[in-house]
Length: 304
Length: 261
Image (cartoon, rainbow over all chains, first blue to last red; front, side, top):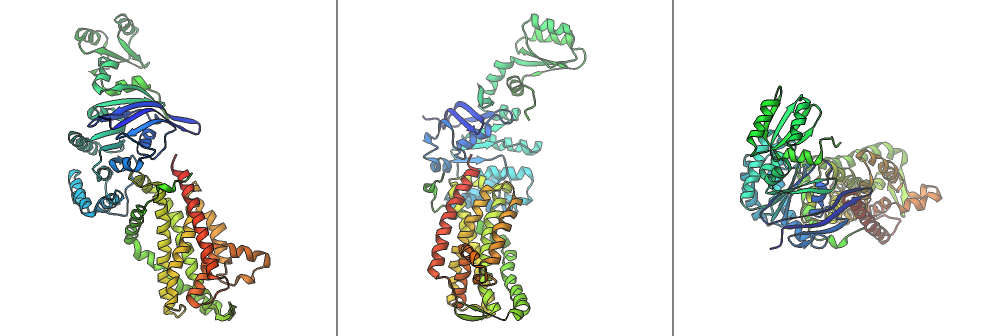
């Protein structure tokens, strides 16, 4: 079966900047796929090309096996896009927002009304259906945006940083809903720079930087491959530590005030030795996360 | 670049969205066309009109108020349409990100922009209808002929909405709409044969005034409301039609260049 998204050597150049530099990936039906990267890595540019907002400079881009250049209307009628910026109509009520959006898809009025009821229920917004959007909290507005992007029962959902700017409660609720959608078999492409989010939700992901794909894989495989599985952070270390870890061939990052050691999960003896011998003051021993992988690959320098 | 093949009747869905949003604030919006003509009639009728007396125009002798009353409708058409595709469209595009949301649906950019322009013309026609009722009550509009001013206002609205959209595609910030307001709208408001016949202008300036789209809306309004005109009806309709088509196309090009990167 054809993949839902098939991207090959996709390139996007603005005047003097190459925002996306020949990336290739594909997303299979039912997959929750992550597009990760620092600010300015080319994530939003990539998904804007996906829903026809922005024409590619080069490469091929197929969604549902269709060409975005020619069959854009067919593609756009079958995807749902939840943009980063709030584009809800502030003057209209919650239910009017859904009804009007449905009309852009030529969805019959009764069908739209029924779906809108279901979606508001699913996103815990039923009690707000007659409120104006301007009266909603940030978390509710984001849930409504997501509800709106599902009004056409899309075969592909595109999420651009779905939880940026939300408080922890709202974020957890969003994750819970996204998890439920995933269980229903919806195909999702998500960009995020919250690694915890990607680790929890994504089946597979790519990390992009400077418009290029650095790695691709499942969160678990990427963590195993790029960190070993365990992390020991030692603050205020002595030189003896470095001699020891070099002697034992342990991967590490030296951040001047801190050492970050990446050790294999199955090396309990080694880990204990390091902790016993070198953990004088501040020391953290924990499981490696996707964030460690991300920082190792894209660096720790500020981007903006 | 322009993609006319991307335009379908689906644009009416966006027009409808604007109508529904407008429905929320129509009571406030209706006040202007309702009250403005009354203020003008009072000021010009009781104040200025007494000093001026009568105006010879198109072979007829008119009281000053009768002369300017149809022009007030034309001016409202210009203001409503131009304001809608400049300030209001800019707010939707930039601050409310409405177009971004719409572009993630099967709508094309051309359909969204065309809908904005047609909506602006609709608003201009609605304002004209209210003013016809008010001015008609004072006896300054001859019915049923005057009702034809509603479709004429729609045509005039398209012309100014198109021009407004060209500016919206260009201006970096919303404050800069002051510039076309000052350089384009205000001179037209004053010199299009609105408050005095353009034959009063120096000879070199008269062709310029005839080239103003507002002049043709004023002429249509005078003709339809009181049966007096100096420029032929077909000339005015023809001019406004060509002007509208050209500037709607330029507006579409301008917005595509701005939004699709």
